[in-house]
Amino acid sequence: MKKLILILVAALGLSVSVGVCAQEGGVPWDKAPDKTQDVKALQHGAALFANYCMGCHSASFMHYSDLQKLGLSEQQIKNNLMFATDKIGDMMKTNMAPAQAKAWFGVVPPDLTLIARSRAVEGHSGADYLYNYLRGFYRDETKPTGWNNTVFPGVAMPNVLWELQGERHLKHVETQQGGQKVATAQFEQITPGTVTPAKFDDDVADLVAFLQWMGDPAYETRVHLGIWVLLFLAVCIFLTWRLNKAYWKEIK
Image 1 (cartoon, rainbow, N blue to C red):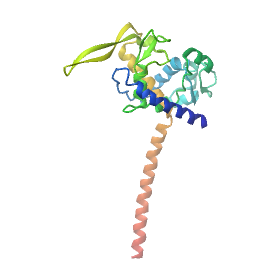
Image 2 (tube, rainbow, N blue to C red; image 1 turned 90 degrees about the vertical axis):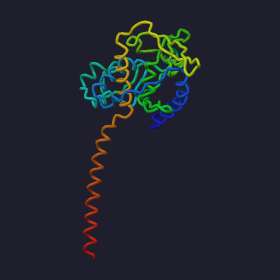
Image 3 (cartoon, rainbow, N blue to C red; image 1 turned 90 degrees about the horizontal axis):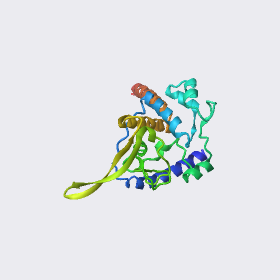
Image 4 (cartoon, rainbow, N blue to C red; image 1 turned 120 degrees about the vertical axis):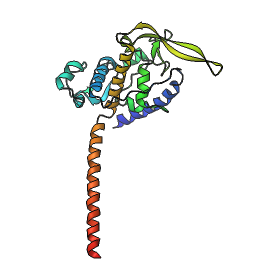
């Protein structure tokens, strides 16, 4: 519990600085598609997370066995999603040592279990932040990794999805608005990715949906339980009302 609290505090502290950085990129944010009820999207998001994120990041409050809640069998999880262990009951942790990560990137990559719940900024949800962040990388040779990001300028993380997305530059174009010249930022594709831009956006939406689910895997259970609790309370209130009415009728 103490570790969970420390991670939440650190993540919330970072979200304040992220809110400032988000205004500097100059590229408007898009609303993240809501795929949290789409089981196929969540399964695909889990595969993307295991293949592209877990090389550096952990989800140390999740067990691999928790993925069975998404309709995946134990064998499917072992065959397609487990690269750092062979025990399905283990936590979803990266094999990268913190010291090694800091030497490569300058910082230790954060745990992603609660990332979607901690990255909300003013006017945008954590899902919106992640959706635009993962789609906001562009080539910048002035940075150590060769990459920069419109949502988080100067980020230490490289674009791990670059093969899917392709390589892009960020250029500023002057347009006339209200008789004044306004500079707007636009992406310019350098090399194509292995998927179309529309498919890439859809893949990122799946990954973001999984990150949302991972931050609160019991959400659906709570909703369904809550409905039954409300129905039970409604019946109890009705019976109490009838009992109260019958009781006072006898007294009168």
